[in-house]
Amino acid sequence: MGMMDGKRGLVVGIANDRSFAYSIAESLIREGAECLFTHLPGDKMARRCGKAVSALGVEDPWLCPLDASSDEDLDAVFDRIGSEFGKIDFLVHSIAFADREWLQEGKFTKTPREVYTQAMDISAYTYAAMANRASEIMPDGGSVIAMSYYGAEKAVPGYNVMGVAKAALEATNRYLALELGAKNIRANVISGGPLRTMSSMAVGGFSEILDWVEKKSPLQRNITGADVGDSAAWLLSDLSRGVTGQVLYVDSGYSIVGL
Image (tube, rainbow, N blue to C red; front, side, top):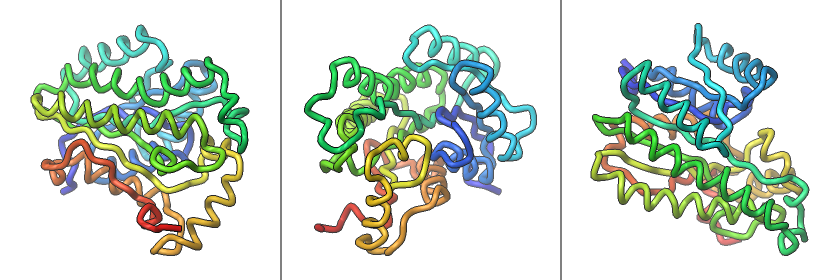
């Protein structure tokens, strides 16, 4: 028996087996959940996502292309899920984007308008857009989560516009929790510690951040994907039925340290 037995939901954001979304799906599947997956448009991205999902042991996975910046694509994904399955129980939003050229120390103040707005769109707005559509196929209630980072709360050198977008994501989560609670849908965010992923390596000075967290965090180590995956499975399960609107820090305790 797993804590996600009988649950079905959508996982958005698997790029490869090093992504947070992969670790979350791994924990969900272990606990009995059925996971549906999206991938960026194109054959290359479909193959990359399919390879990662295959490593999870999922046979004949449900895969659908998604350009999250397109309302038409968003509609197509959730309409297809509703048509084929009728309902879902959870949503994992694990996508973010900012032009890596501007994720360098000393470049924040010169961030171009289009880079700023794109980061806000992909990293924050899409969470609200997906949660809105998911809520229409959650007649029995459910749980939605998104991924954030401490740079939403504190200024982390090099994180720049992504930190602003993550702050917007966390505020978005609170408003989602407020409105979706009437439908018995919970909304929470996991603020994961630094992990070597494709997106994190775009941040200037990332290796120094890893070294600092290992040195200064109470657990004196960096997190693993499994740390986040297991926490996500709990948040998406009925075991966390009284928790909504929260930011759960899975960061070896680094966020409590004053220096």
